[in-house]
Length: 288
Image (tube, rainbow, N blue to C red; front, side, top):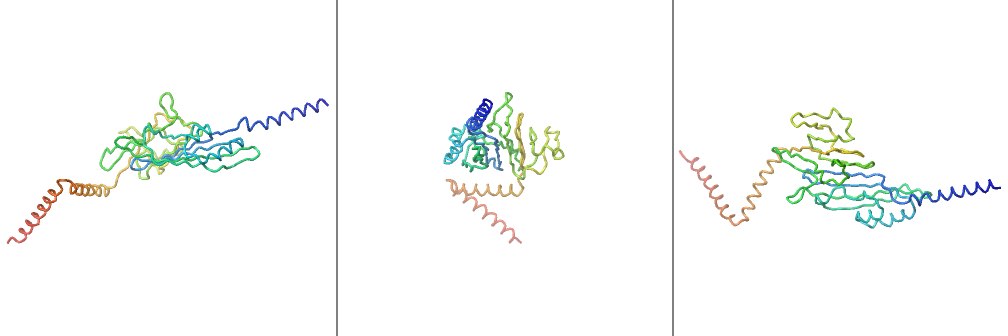
């Protein structure tokens, strides 16, 4: 009788512990963070960030569903306690454009265990470099029609080691998308998705760098430390664009001059010059 009562008590205790598990471990847990930075030719960028969340406990599932009306990261961070709900490009360095947050519907829910998964997506634009503001890229036109692009690592908002190295925590991925016509691409740390493409790299003794000449223009680093992180590439404008830009600048100069105070004088001088050239040409042609 005592053995039966003891087994019953143990079973009741075990059942109580099982029932307590959802409440003990209830809440929100970040399972993965994916950041994609799409870099544009003018130095601007579009950023998309996604946090994948594991939710445990019915009250937290209900809290998530009731929070979809919030369109700012601070409210979501306060409600979930997830620190990764922040911009990983810092406003202190770059200028932001349009911002949008999109909480995704619950998925893979287990009604018995009271668990669900969800994702929160937010996107924003980064303006190019201006006289009073840096950008996510540094641009240098070091030879005709050629621009050198360098990633401005000061714009990145990730944990740093004591030596200033960027730390991507486990489950964190950083993806860079660069223009399709980029060339002479170099990295201080080879991206994981092209680590096996040794034949696509060439060493340049003049610059003491290894350049990537492969086909990929999307590069991914995941869950690793990026020591003294750098990424550079070049873009060369076609000759036709240089010619078009030259004539456009002349046209802009003419129109701006016409609207200035000295515009009438400039037009008069131009008319006299053209008339003189035509007159000389006529005299030369009519001469015996």
